[in-house]
Structure formats: C-alpha cells, structure tokens
Length: 177
Image 1 (cartoon, one colour):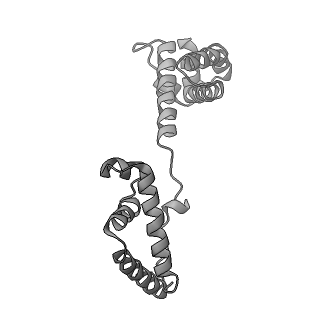
Image 2 (cartoon, helix red, strand yellow):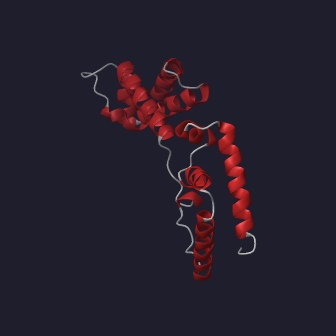
Image 3 (tube, rainbow, N blue to C red):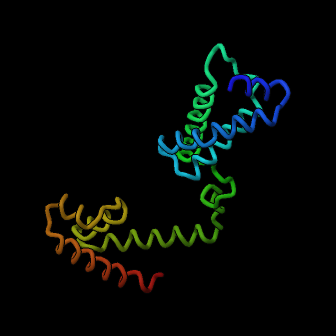
C-alpha cells in the first residue's frame, strides 16, 4: 500500500489511488462508525480522508508510519474537527439575534419614561406586602413558588396577594395609560 501512495504522490496515479480507495474507504467508514459517527457522517469523513490522500500523498513517509496508521490518524483528526464544528457552529452574521436593536425613537422613549413613572407611583399606593411581591415577581423574576418559599408564605397567599395587587394597579393605571 505504501507503493500505491508513493505512486499517487509521484505521478497522481489514478489506478493506485483506486486500489487505496477500494481497500481503505470502507474500513475508515467502519472505524468512524465505531467511534460514534452516524452512517452519513462516517461516509463523508471517509471521503474527505481519501481526498486528503489524493492531495497530500507526498507528505506520507513510510519510515514514520504505516499507510493504515497515517490514514486512521487523518480520519480521527477529521472526526474531531467535525465534532468541534458541531459544538461551535459558525455563526451567521445576518442572524437577527446578532444584529443591534434599532435605536428607540425619542417620542417612544419619552412615553416609556412617563409610563414607568406612572407605574412607580401606582406601586406606592399598594400595601407593602403586595408591593414587595410585585417587586420579587417582576423585577427580580422570582416564580410564585420561590416567593412563597423565601417569604415563608403559603403559595395560595402569594397568588391571591399578587391578583389583588394587579387589580389595584390596573384600576390606578386605567385612566393614566
């Protein structure tokens, strides 16, 4: 087999490459599948390895390794490259999540600021236990269960106090919104 690789390196011998391909491609695929690659992925990586053999046959040195060792090392390294690409896929620069958000219009910023002030004022009208629950649920993002556990309150009490707080806030904000 080393003679075949050297023939590919020296004169791009297609017949020698065919011998290498016929012998090693199915074995490489089986090896890759044993490492955990899917059938399609193993086939693709084995094809890439054989393309590498065609392009880089001149780098093979029979004094350093056997043909099979060289090819299986290339296959293992290619598989690692594939796994890395899957773990850290290339990002799409046009992905909407990666684009900066549009600048807020001045009138929208003023309206949002006014709304925020009205909500803050409305929160001051609530009894302290209801205002605290609103702060924990919406400003800190706690779930009802977390609030109940941390404040040592029954879950039903937390829910009913939040409902009462919303009714009062809604009543206080309906005319202002």
